[in-house]
Image (cartoon, rainbow, N blue to C red):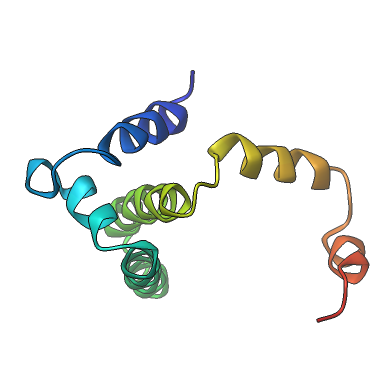
Length: 105
């Protein structure tokens, strides 16, 4: 089991926990929209550190992004394995070809 799987499993256990028992439970209790907002904030912070070129701060922010992504996915009942399966499906396909194959919205 990967560390991301372990983290995703821990997040799942927090879905039914009391909001005052952990940051994850508190965030999940606020709903999927708040989870998405927090993910966005963390993504912006990672972008800022990438632009600045601070490797240590970028590493820390990237960890926050991964954590908040998993929380956001859990809030919408999207399993990490489903995301990984989608990545596997796309593997070996040109990014340009894959994007062109998506339905137009």
